[in-house]
Amino acid sequence: MGSAAERNKKKGQKGFSLVEVLVAMAIMAVIAGAVLSGLATSQKATRLTDIRTQSETIARSQIEYLKAHVDTWYDVSDPPNYDAYILPPPSGYTVSIVAERMDPKQDGYTNDDELQQITVTVSHRGEVILSLTDFLFKP
Image 1 (tube, rainbow, N blue to C red):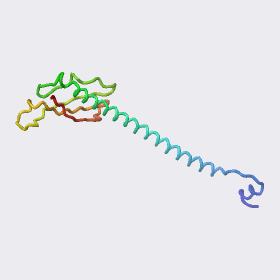
Image 2 (image 1 turned 90 degrees about the vertical axis):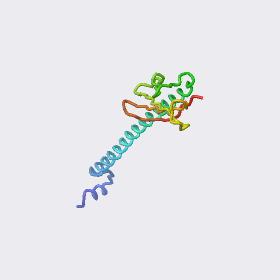
Image 3 (image 1 turned 30 degrees about the vertical axis):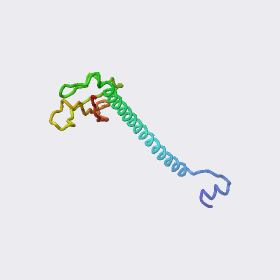
Image 4 (image 1 turned 90 degrees about the horizontal axis):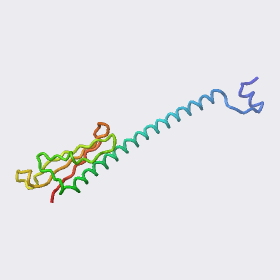
């Protein structure tokens, strides 16, 4: 008498043994785990990219808003304060503006050149995401 595999071949039966099925299931489980892990990582990366993109849009909009209205309310106080002119950000985001007078004439006075460095910082749920710096000039 031969082995079980030889007996099955003689009878014309074709099939998988229990060990083969278990190995195949284990391989499938490992592959499924890797795919699910990759999907979770991809979703997290997409969410972070969306937050960064939204933060950049908010910061650029805020700077453009300040530049568009510079003739109306150019702050001459020292240091300049533009908090009253912050556009309302979307839910979960906060915006802060820091302005610093510049002295391009190099005359030692920072109050007569009408040039300011503006830094807009955007935070999401308390975490700083982006700081964008530009210049505000009153012609």
